[in-house]
Image 1 (cartoon, helix red, strand yellow):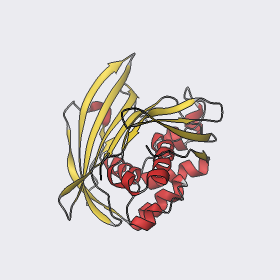
Image 2: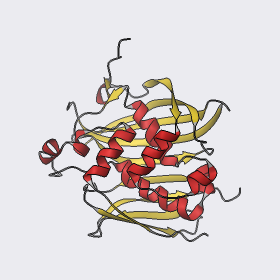
Image 3: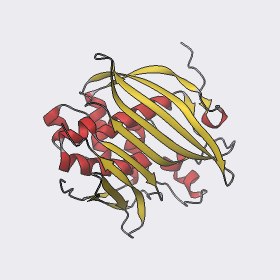
Length: 122
Length: 140
């Protein structure tokens, strides 16, 4: 199986705002620091789909067009990413042809875990 | 033209089908998405195809035009399956439904299923499943 190169990303509140506008998701937990401070998270958190984008970016970089045409992913968001988190993603090949994927923050906390796959033929 | 009221997601029943809608996946949107995600892969320009999650995010954003998430809602799971590459630009059709809702520890778990099709080919492009956890009845 194709080896997947890891990806490292740095989040910021500005980037989260930019993503909120692009994705039309203005949930205050992501962009309203006063509101987010009253939640159990104590501050704003990144959109799950923004964090997940780092996984898709990693798969696209290593697998190319086959990921764009037939990629599959199935993930759980295990913990929220703070808007200042540094992300690192990784993928390990499984025996069944899928990849086990993870995204962690700078403290080693797993933010996302799950699997990715591409068609075996074509 | 009157803007239709958005339905609170936690008030909708299992099986609720959202009205089919269409949207354009434009180069401007994809550029904005790639800037927001800081994704510098050349593969999108080289192939003329959209990042899979740009399509999924746009589909979810379109659903958010007609549904309101209670404040404090959290995205807890996501599935995406590309059925075909999505050229940029494309006209896409979106169908979605509330596939499941349940309660756990005082929180509501809702699963949304959605399907995106390429209008000019009348062909499926993407299937997605989004799991959300939200406070019951909380409105932000």
